[in-house]
Image (tube, rainbow, N blue to C red; front, side):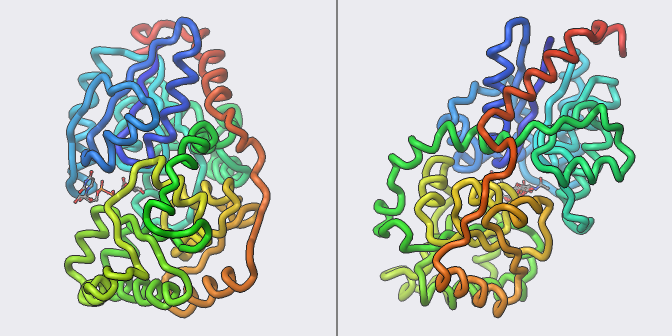
Length: 378
Ligand code: UD1
């Protein structure tokens, strides 16, 4: 069996790493890794490959930044000839970024099987680019690997055949469990001058939160209020960094008085181990990321999600996640409640046990061994 794994953006890397490992442990499986280059900074990409022990990509398509159409289109233009030359049995894509849909569409049009890791998640908010990427990728896929019960329900409702859906658990948790001990050893909080559980951790990068100046200012004003109770560490995504340079409220918050004894500590994007270390020791996490809602659930760290919806409802039903939207008063009230109440320990969802990638490899190995040669199918 020949498999091509496609990654492009930061949240893909920790999902692909354990799947590549699991596939490589199987005899008679050849794995190729392709990086689209959607994320290209060292802090957003190369560092993750090093820390997660991932093989160097066999090819880097170097698409870089651009509008959605440009980025997606460029990936397709550059990926198609590789698929034609390599003729894999399966293309494996991860999550919901532009690289995911671009690679899936290329493969499906060449009648190459597509496997989607993290299928079926739905926010039911089509203004999110990721929601469109999820829906389209799922409908192009032959293997839909799901992380939580809501995903199967969503897929069946959309008419996807049950035989294509495999509830395997969460590959991000495989990576978290594998690297947790190393991350603890980093002691990032102490390096930044905080005791464990004496700071909050903030991430923010969704266009809906940072691209509109008024919304961004509202969120930052909430963060400032929370930081009066608890200092906040803020590793900053490049998109958000650009917005900070344009926003007057943000500029005011980042004045020297704030950086001498910072209540809001702005950092460059962190590597996987440093960020995980900070998450483990955080008193509270505020985020608009998808993956961080899941990671905090596994770690039992309270998480406030600065969005109106989530495609990962299990983190609310069973985990430590609370949706708080992007209005100042709601964010501050929710943070104060967490600080006053001590904790919101949840349970770890089913099959988030560190073995999701093994299940994926087993399914692919089992089903694809029996397929005719790819060349005959095309
Ligand atoms: C992408 C994903 C999002 C994911 C996020 C994680 C899509 C539609 N969005 O959003 O789902 O949660 O990655 O980070 O695929 N930039 C750099 N260096 C880089 C990469 C980006 O400076 O290595 C800057 C560029 O100015 C770029 C901007 O960040 O225009 C946004 O990057 P882009 O890949 O378009 O989307 P993300 O916001 O990172």
